[in-house]
Length: 108
Image (cartoon, rainbow, N blue to C red; front, side, top):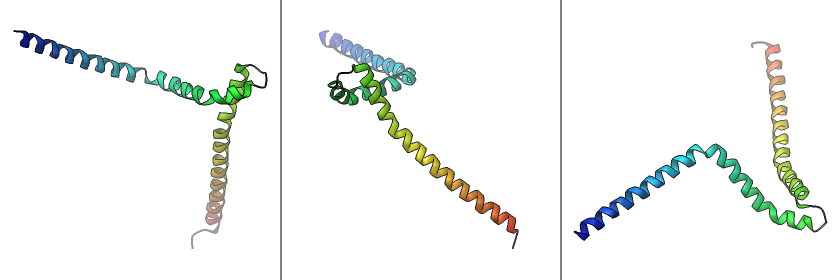
């Protein structure tokens, strides 16, 4: 009898564990649009904390230092995007000039 009761409770524990995992997975998938930015913010805060600590030795507060570090960390990707877009616009302009020149010449 004890073996059957033990097996029943083991099955109950397995079903309970599977249910908890399923509910947790569904909850995380439902909250994913909220959790991704929070996770990115936590990673940035963790990575930029030593930079801010070094900058705080100068005397200004941590809030201002955090803002400066976050601005500087976002400045490089923004500049890279700006350079890539300007290169794309130059290439597009060259393509349009070549196409209009071919159109002006007419068929051969």
